[in-house]
Length: 231
Ligand SMILES: Cc1cc2nc3c(=O)[nH]c(=O)nc-3n(C[C@H](O)[C@H](O)[C@H](O)COP(=O)(O)O)c2cc1C
Image 1 (cartoon, protein in one colour):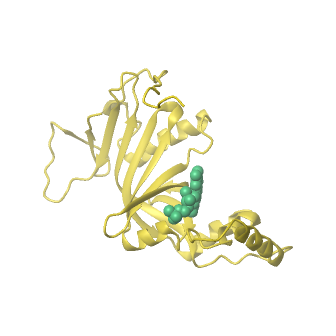
Image 2: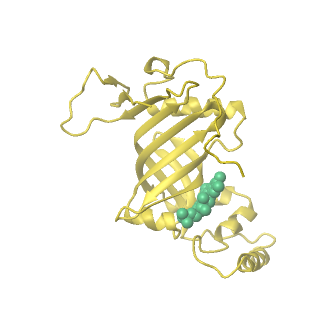
């Protein structure tokens, strides 16, 4: 097989640099919403809400995986999972995490850093019961991230649960399944450019005691500052 070092793909169709004056909003959530709406309308990405979630243990050992973002608003970014999974355990001991969206057709990446918290059992149940029954059963088939001897364990458990909850029987939402809300404290918007001088705009809040540097910072809305990072 040919080496991968030669894989190069020029970024066509990106006409303009992405500068602070080109932001749809000086509030990062509204800027995210603008990019998200564009990629959604574009339809070139089947799951624009797919995002990587990076977590780390208390001692700093990282791990990462994809999940689907089910809601985002001024409260944060919401995803659902099994609280007993590897990510669940890591978020329990260290709620700081990082989210990342990559929309390849438009060469855009958004990085978000924030703090995760469990949402209420009621809100998780609301979402659980809004899903088709098969998805509800799928969510409770096994203890996510546990080691199992073979695939058959899942198939057998699935059949048993389908039988148990056939007809009108409703599937109880287990306590170990629910949502995490990630409250962002930093965003970075990355726009790939044809000449590889990619644009990177970061939103963050000033640290305690840090003063505003007008050579390097611009004021965003709602207490955010905006900085350009080198590509
Ligand atoms: C596109 C995509 C979307 C996914 N969405 C979810 C999700 O919303 N929730 C979830 O728990 N796992 C989701 N998964 C599976 C996770 O990537 C992962 O395998 C699982 O959550 C176990 O991760 P952990 O062992 O690190 O906790 C998704 C995987 C892919 C590729």
